[in-house]
Amino acid sequence: MVKKTYIESLRQFFQFGVSIIIAVTLALLSLDKYDKLLKEDIFHGILSIALFVVTFFWFIAWIYFDQKELQIFEDHINTDKLKRLNFGTFLNCLLITILCGVLLATSDKLLFYLIVVIINAVITTIAYYIVHYKSLKIYNDPKEENNKGQKIILEYYIYRPFSILDFLMIFLLLSSLALLILSSLTNNNNYFYFAYILCILTIIFHELIIWSWRIKRDKKLLELEDKTI
Image (cartoon, rainbow, N blue to C red):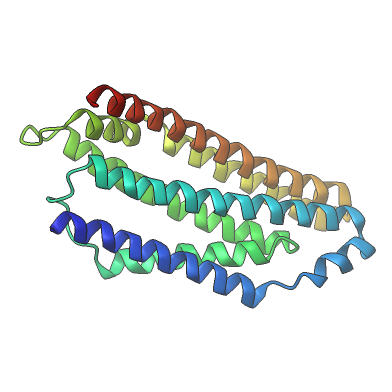
């Protein structure tokens, strides 16, 4: 019963977060701005639309994979010993989802977008560190009988270099921010366009690696399930 309560709480937080993203996006998004941008500066317009599309698919994938992650936890992880979710966790989820909604609506304002996505990346890095610490604690607990499925999941969070990947993402985003500032100081639009391209490629690079890690792990879990049938 405690396990169900924990997982259901996570699901409710997640569903609430998705609704916040949609609400914030709809409140801030104005599609006619892209048409105006294309007429004023076609490269800015194209890059803004590209960043919007990348951000959109980023969050669609995030919704898909995190829903799947909850199901995997419910199937393989013994959450009886985990503490109930507290108000601090709720505020953290709320902040991340609000930032995500803002990102989806501000692809035409790169300076603002970069500041928000860097903040979001820092929060995500801290969250992964907490998950890594808790996974390591469970993994090394002699009283904890880790089944094969739970062991695969714990090892995923322990041994995958999430912190290195996240720090690299933050570094590249800061580099994009530096190019943007350089563009404003030199009045050179090329730096501005390169800043957009670097930001887009950084997000794609980061997410493709995360997805590949999850797909490989899920394949191991699927193979384990096939053996137990």
